[in-house]
Image (cartoon, rainbow, N blue to C red; front, side):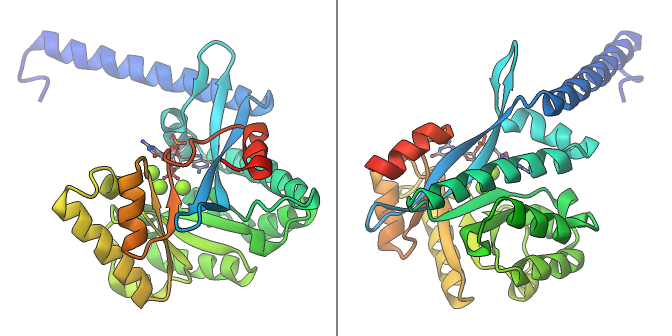
Length: 278
Ligand code: C2E
Ligand code: MG
Ligand code: MG
Ligand code: MG
């Protein structure tokens, strides 16, 4: 297409592509270096029972503390980490860090609830995936019931048959499984019924304009009803206001995650909430 539009355009596209490829190579090299230099840090965001305002757990969310760029959001580097395969090592690092942390909190007599961690599908496809979990649980002295894994709906549904097999093994370890970003990934209800999952996480896109947007309100209520009828727990993410919280709780979704309670924060700040409340 660029060619029909004349030479200049063609050159323009061409050099943009080269720049993108260059940027990618540079980014990939710095991701590798960052793993080696331990520049990744884990933030924690509270998951709360919106009825009682008590913490039921937290989600571990990675950030990149870059020496010159500052704190880089995962949206900027997770896709590249996924396409290069570095995500496997990164996720293992995040899991080990977060699991060590929650184990320490329990040991200190705090009640942090369940630790939810995001899992790239690449990790699930690794043959040693289960052994890696078992080993991590052992070395960090975590109990499986303290742990939950979040896998995005879109990614489960890319290879649902494969996903069912491996998710079943994780579930057999006693680890809770959540479908992340639910509502955005074209789930087949037939597969949803067969997946060994425990929880649906309503995507923040449906929460943002609650309760005024009638369609979003309708979708949210439908997902809550779907979860109940499949005997699944349900949690809403991206809850920023009290009206959103109230709407969800009134409609049967008492599990809430979002800025309304807390942004993702470093471990010391999270510990402060565990000790002193919000
Ligand atoms: P996610 O798993 O769906 O995580 C929720 C995202 O929503 C987080 O973005 C969180 O900071 C943000 N969020 C939470 N509450 C609110 C709110 O009230 N308002 C708004 N506007 N946003 C809210 P974050 O931390 O930038 O992470 C983005 C995505 O990156 C995550 O989406 C997850 O898919 C991925 N990710 C993050 N950490 C990891 C990791 O360690 N491993 C893997 N594989 N993926 C990760
Ligand atoms: Mg998540
Ligand atoms: Mg999500
Ligand atoms: Mg998301």
